[in-house]
Length: 243
Image 1 (cartoon, rainbow, N blue to C red):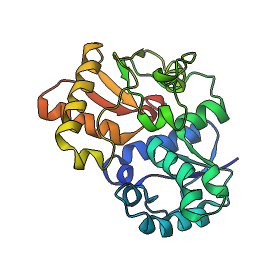
Image 2 (cartoon, rainbow, N blue to C red):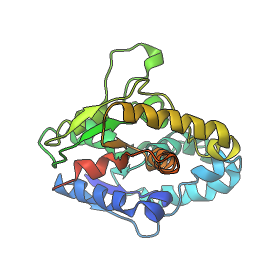
Image 3 (cartoon, rainbow, N blue to C red):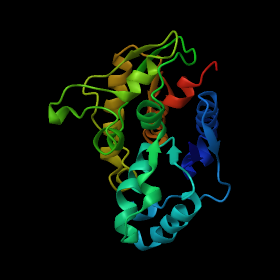
Image 4 (tube, helix red, strand yellow):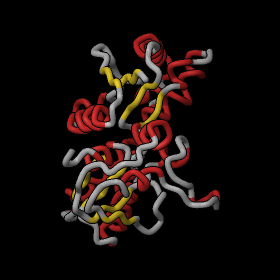
């Protein structure tokens, strides 16, 4: 399989180590990975802010740049969900490339079907289930649907030596980031973030992990401002640790 690696702009600018860990992990698992140099933002910030027309040229560029790959893999559930769900509507036609977009967690779990031991991370880790991952990509079971519980993120983390995975009370409740929501409803967003971080801390975990840097960034900012003692790592950093 030919894999096109898409690194969202906020990952590239703020968390480049997550992009590197994604590439490292995919290569370790024998995948044929290419990082197209001319990639840009997927257009999600513009569309979420109400400027959908400004996202269309970015969607068109993405379609053309990644059309030669079997899969497009990204370490971001929000960007992946935006491209897969919204590109066909924005471009007003069926998008072959958008259909091939997968978050790295679902790609490793559903396509590669990783079943061997990965890295080493001897720490207690609280799992954060980002809203886009739960309700648009199906990475874990939404509590409101009362279906049989599953969690693809947890399945992969169990392949890491030394790790202890826990989940907070109300495990799929929003952290309050929500992109533009955190700007337009600052006080509500901050309180939701504080409540969420407190629940993660109550598990006794040393780290919070999840599949989306935006959620982790929001909670890390809240924790730092409130003086809360807990660290944050993207799930691919943990899966690739010690490889």
